[in-house]
Length: 195
Image (cartoon, rainbow, N blue to C red; front, side, top):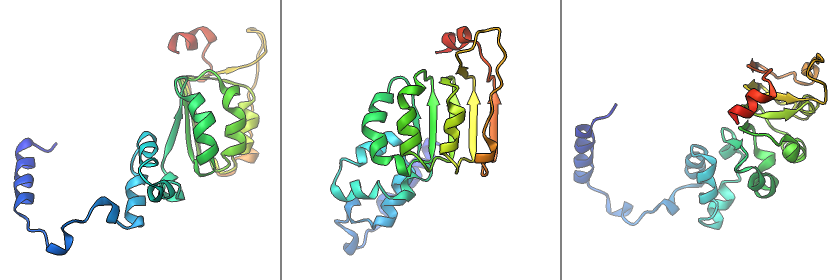
């Protein structure tokens, strides 16, 4: 971990560096598009929302596919309406990583996710409740490489005593490399306690 002393040394070194006259007056707006795209690809989605409002050039740059290659969109009960109504229609085709976290209303976002987000490669469902239609919906993401159901509950219209076999459509998920099923069969009561 860097120490305060190291920071002071670097800081004092930076103070003593002479800046060539041709570099004085250069601002972040003078950076080339390629460098800005790289910077934007390293920040989180909330920051991208702010960057999007800076100027028309930056608004165009945040829509570049390279910005979205590692961007993970997290849907939870607090933000899903905003994401469903305002964000997904605009960036869904670029979206590759989606996480449902502390989420109960899968049917509310099902249509936008399955119709607007064809390029999803990573889907993580964590401490959430989803409907059994999720298994049919997996067919909408043929590029899926990573699928995780952690501490989640699949809702069915079956009685508690009935056995139900969930069928993951592997024949449609030819690129799937990772499947995580951790505490996948939670009871409704235990999931409600977590949520």
